[in-house]
Length: 147
Image: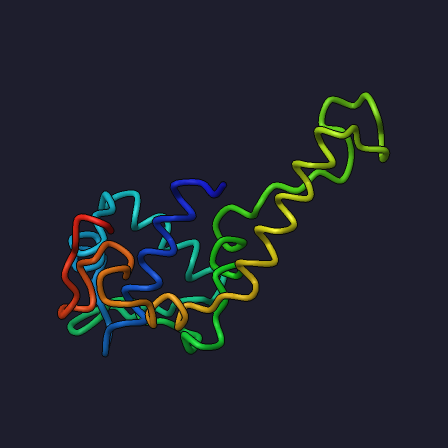
């Protein structure tokens, strides 16, 4: 559905949205269970897309650049690894007239885009405490076996 890189980006963004003040790559990586080196590259991409801001030095780190209730899941995914759509036959056999398989795949991708576009980062934070991403944040959240 989405790449692991896009999921990691969403984890980092949701974590930052739940924090006050800047967070270092190390802090983000530890809480979100993302490999630190990989996270650094993701954070650079998010910075280039203007979804996060970074500050160097003492008390430096990353902060969310857009309010959680204004930032959609789709914007985060598109900044990292956009949902694959089929506008032409990927095999070059049908041109603009998609075969039934590619039409269905494109319809599914369109539905995913619509769902992600209709969901904000604030929506993810408003989930019941046992359904928050990673169950490790906010601090009060507790994982259950059903998570």
